[in-house]
Amino acid sequence: MDLKGRDFLTLLDYEPEEIEYLIDLAKKLKDDKKNGVMHDVHRGKNIALIFEKTSTRTRCSFEVAAHDLGMGVTYLDPKGSQIGQKESIADTARVLSRMFDGIEYRGYGQDIVKALADYSDVPVWNGLTNEYHPTQLLADLLTIKEHFGRIKGLKWVYMGDARYNMGNSIMIACSKMGMDFTACTSSKYFPDEELVNKCRRYAGQSGGSITLTENIDEGVKDADIIYTDVWVSMGEPEEVWAERINALKPYRVTMDIMKKAGASAIFMHCLPAYHDLGTKVGLDIKEKFGMEELEVTNEVFESERSVVFDEAENRMHTIKAVMYATL
Ligand code: CP
Ligand code: NVA
Image 1 (cartoon, rainbow, N blue to C red):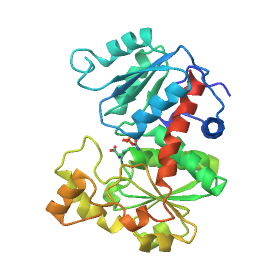
Image 2 (cartoon, rainbow, N blue to C red):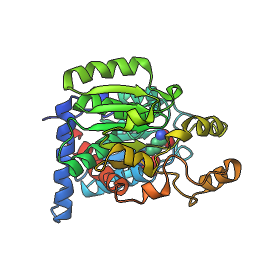
Image 3 (cartoon, rainbow, N blue to C red):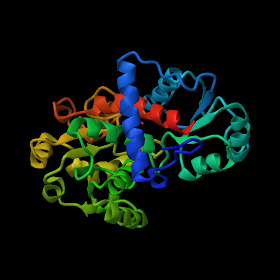
């Protein structure tokens, strides 16, 4: 499998065998690291990380993975560079690709990371846009494979805002990998029809399926994975909270939902999560709406069903696999 020089912008651009290869490579790099086997194969290279939105996992994963691969890292935050203010994406791409061997971008529209890739001579990796979060999906698929020993044929239910980066990316991953995807949410938050149709075509080839339903009993029945994400994503205005809470409250992941899903179902979340009052936003929401838990209850989050910290760890190993393979 030769992925050298490839961008990693959305899983739409990757074949199922390539996705599987990256997951298995990540597992190997994870085992190597745990066994103290060095893999600094990219010694002497340098990467740039552009973050127009905040991050804990993605930034740390790129930095730690780059160090493990022997590379130098430069972090650019929105205020500390000229990007978008005094210099276009096209010019930024041409400057950075003269100095760096790879560029990560986290920000707003997919068109921005696409433009960055179009004008760069080096691989560009999507660290989250409004539309897609492909590196998160590699971590989730690795976590699923580690837990169940397989990927194909499993039923993955997404509850929440299924029209945004996580809902879209999970639907694409399921359709490519032969999994059964269900968006179980208010129809207002179903994914975009054009993307659904595209994914149905992939699912037809892979043996997967796509279901959109508002019915909770039907949606979560026989699920292997129950997944949720924040109800309001980075970059969205605060005013959307009221409407979002109103529409998505029935789809909060509770123990009752986990019981309906079945005894072996696991709970997944890309994080960060609002499951208690340990955050500033959580406290603000409690004051305004009287709710102490949002997309998932603390009971589920802290339960044995929850694999959220395995996912978080796997962000690093899978991002490392992407850089290992594409540089
Ligand atoms: N899941 C995820 O992308 O986390 P960060 O926003 O902390 O990078
Ligand atoms: N949908 C969330 C994902 C965070 C990892 C957001 O875009 O904020």
